[in-house]
View 1 (cartoon, rainbow, N blue to C red):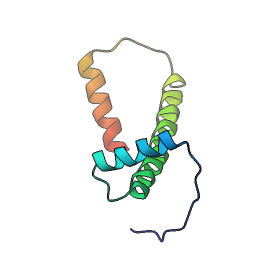
View 2 (tube, rainbow, N blue to C red):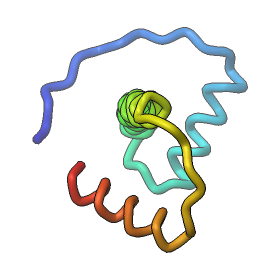
View 3 (cartoon, rainbow, N blue to C red):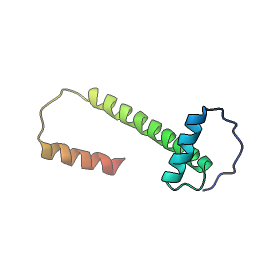
View 4 (tube, helix red, strand yellow):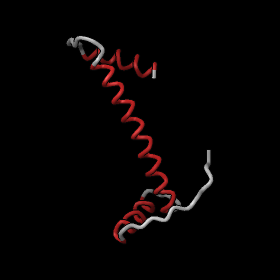
Length: 85
């Protein structure tokens, strides 16, 4: 889904501007603006993933007594968790 664009004025050092332009070219973005939009979207996605991981780890810590499990048990458990996600 394409969102309508709006303008954001951004003041950055010349060196950072050149780095953004070069990265946009190197990664085959059509413009520096597209590259920066990608960075913001990626950052938002990763922040959401960190939240989910944090909740998952907290749930695990509060789950009960810890016990040793085999790699096979861990693999089976992770497959189940992924299917439920």
